[in-house]
Image 1 (cartoon, rainbow, N blue to C red):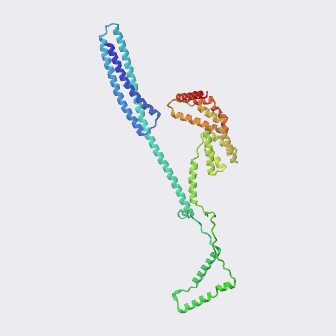
Image 2 (image 1 turned 45 degrees about the horizontal axis):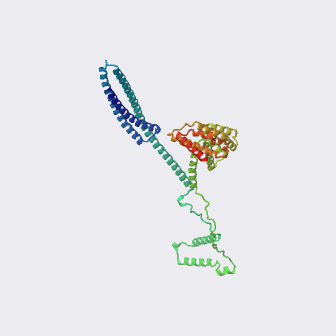
Image 3 (image 1 turned 45 degrees about the vertical axis):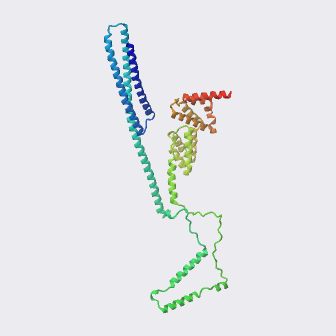
Length: 448
């Protein structure tokens, strides 16, 4: 009878503990998700909160049931123990067994209390995660509004400059475009003939009398005067007799292979607007050097900086100023020393600064030491470290890219030896290492 009751107690106890462990596993899964992704959006945070609340209520109900079960069993056991006070060794064995059961009950209560504290802690963390997500959302909104305001300010500034230039030059973009062609100078003979006609018209207009007091006598005098004036001009026969040659302007045939005419005038307003926009874009591409002795950092920064200097068409003094401005704390000190030593020769100062930077941050030995330390300090990955696995792949790709340069081929040959390869193979997860071993064994067998 006693063994049967003990068996029933163990079954009920295991059933309650199994339900509690299942709920605990679900809560731990949500907590792990929050630890892996501390920053989530509002909808995800609300989902986590609802799930935790449901699991919390379920956990409390099951814990109360477990407590009631343990209390009821303890009461029945105490009554039985009082009746068996004077029994033999079998009763002593039963009491010791009951004590072990009570000890296990206390351990279960302690575990429930511990998980309850853990659940409340997760609720508190979820509350702050939601508030942090709201703050990040507001911060992103403010940042977007700030960028929009800055762009609007730049556009207004460019339009103001364009209007000022148009007013200064008395220039209208609508009346002047790419199809504009300047007025050609007329032929000298035609121009001279036009001037003669204009002078003759002026003469005729000057000799026209006032029509307000016209009489027949004055009209007859005017007609006689005009007749005597025109008699002074030569007739066509007189031109032929005196061999007078009148030049005649004629247009020759057009040349189909001639180059198209391009006006010499430039659109100053458009050129100014392009210059302002290009200046802002180029200067925004300049970034500060981080003093990292790695070829990927230094070489990319150097190429970008020199390309921007070429686009801006800067002189040596301007390059020197910009170079010192965008260097890191350590490299800036070297550049300032070279500038002070070559104050009257900025071109030499720029050349010496680049030589010092190449030897300090771009030499093969420095880069090899930096990459070697990064590999040694890289942690050993497990099967769940996917982000770190990509970082290790990027590191290997960087080594491969540097090794293709002839200047670094000899120094970086170490990374392709068995010892160098094992450096980053040992950082891989166990599953990948096992697959590599199987592949190597298969290749060996195939080669044999």
